[in-house]
Image 1 (cartoon, rainbow, N blue to C red):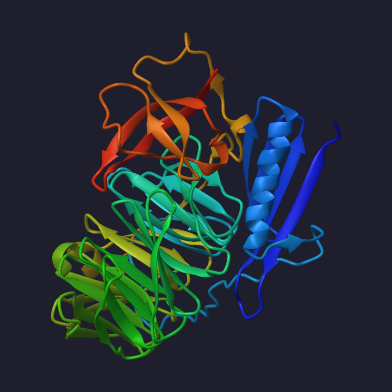
Image 2 (cartoon, helix red, strand yellow):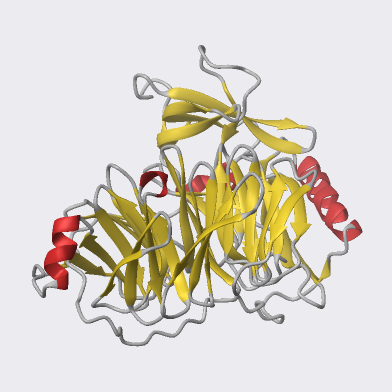
Amino acid sequence: MARETTYLELSQDGGGAHKFYEVTVDGTAVSVRYGRIGADGQLQSSSFPTVEKARAAAAKKIGEKVRKGYAPAVAGQRAARAVSRRQVTSAPSTARAVAPVLWRFRTGSSAFGIHVDEDRCWVGNQAGDVYTLSHEGEVLARYSLPDGVKCLVADEFWIYAGCDDGTVYDLSSKVPFGAYDIAADVDIFWLDIHEGVLSVSDRSGGLTVIDHEDEFQWSRRSPGSNAWMVRADERSVYHGHSQGVTAYAADGGAQLWHTPTNGSVLFGWQEDHTVYAATGRHTVQRLSKATGAVEASYRCDAAVYACATSPDGRHVFAADYASSVYCFDADGQRLWKLGTGGGSALSMQYLDERLYLVTTDGSLICMDASEAAILAAQQGSVPTAVDVKSAAALPVFTPAASAAAVATVSVAAAPAGGVVVECVQQGGRMRVQVVSGGFEPSWNVQFPRGIREPGARYVVDGLHAASGGFYRVRGEIRRLV
């Protein structure tokens, strides 16, 4: 029997849905490819006992989409919808002294994403590259993702990259995979994640919340647009946009407060009891999480692109569009201002008396933020920055797009200590559950959508019980045959 492909699209005016759905029947095999128009999308494959059952399953999938408004189309005739990329300007610093930069790594493209933990530093750029480095500046690995990286966020041990293609990739395993697929009509600006629940802020001022199974939970529309800030904790989600910061209950049931800010919010940071909003009118404002009251302001000399704090907000750091970096005490007194020596910082993070910046020229910069180093820099004495190079044999990891791209292993050769999981159909959804003993049977596993097939079993190096009541994969994923 000849291979049959049905291609559908749903494209709405005014910035609504813009996505495709393609079903292919090849004998007893049915494959479904879906995603944003113009992108490769995600692929799912299934097999059936007979050709008739395969064709019936395909017809059911097509019928469901047609009832939702999809219509037959020709692939490639409708162009991909433009994705917003942050347009920034950068001017030379007016500071008299340059920051004490220890090392600099040039990623090759403008970069926004940064995450720093006890083990390593992560940086992601607009070319889709994510690099990991040691704290001493050694490049350890590279991840090559399909589209530009908007931001990097962490949830316990897990690292996620939000990309321009609308997919949020889990980079915690050996092979990265798409953990969340954001709706095609959501133009991602920023992300945060807490206990597996993903919060997405977008261009139109919307806020979308999705659980660990990639299922929509709730959404709200804040009074402003261009929402470049979202931060979340167990109590609330804090949404920063052109009209200020709005706090919502974690379950989406209520708006808790709204505070106008001194200019549009361009970046956000949080500590246990406060959130910090970096604004276009030269100011970082500290707001109470409980009430939204402005507790302190930190005045810079130009629009503030990024901010961060040392633990408990003892020191507040800020970076402006004029390639300067600042430090304030908790009450708002400016302690110092220095030039970055490498463009304007678009994101930043502080750890152990070091300040890590990603800049407009695509560099990850590590500067010494200790009192002694800053004092020496103000007096004109700075170390010679090491220009970090990437090794020629650097390992490069790419996402697994389908089950065919995942390594297979026989039951007899399965690694000792591996955990077996199985794909099962539940209520119209493909779930992944743990088969091995010693795990809570009611909990599902956060697992790559592109490799979920009915009845398929996989062995993973390990699972971690997340506080949100589900399991996350640790280590490599192999299919059992």
